Length: 136
Image (cartoon, rainbow, N blue to C red):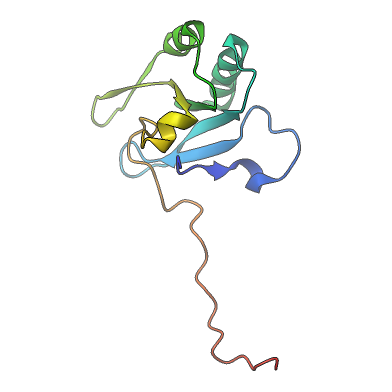
C-alpha cells in the first residue's frame, strides 16, 4: 500500500529496524530511499526513537512508521522533533519521520514523499513460452 520493497527480499532474520524501503527521486533523476518500519502492537515512544536512529544510521531522508494502533501524543511529538527534509529541487519541505496507521492507509492516505520511484524492483519480463511443449 505504500509502494515499499521488502528489506532484503523479505527474508527472515534480523532486519536492523528496517522492514521495507520506498525508493523516490526528489529531483526526478537520482534515486534515494525512505526507511519503512511496521509494528502491529505494543508501540511506544521508544519505537519512534529507534526509527530515528535507523534513519540517521542509513543516511535516509525519511522514515515511515506504520502501526495498527493510534500513536500517542508523545510519539507524534518525537516524530516531529526529527525535523523536516527540504527537497533541493523544489524547496518544498516534508516531515522526516512520518507515522501512518493501518486505518489511514485503508482510507487512502500515503506517505508524504516526493516522486516515488515505482520502477525500482520492477518485475522481469515474462518469458516467451509459446515454444514449450505440452505436458499432457
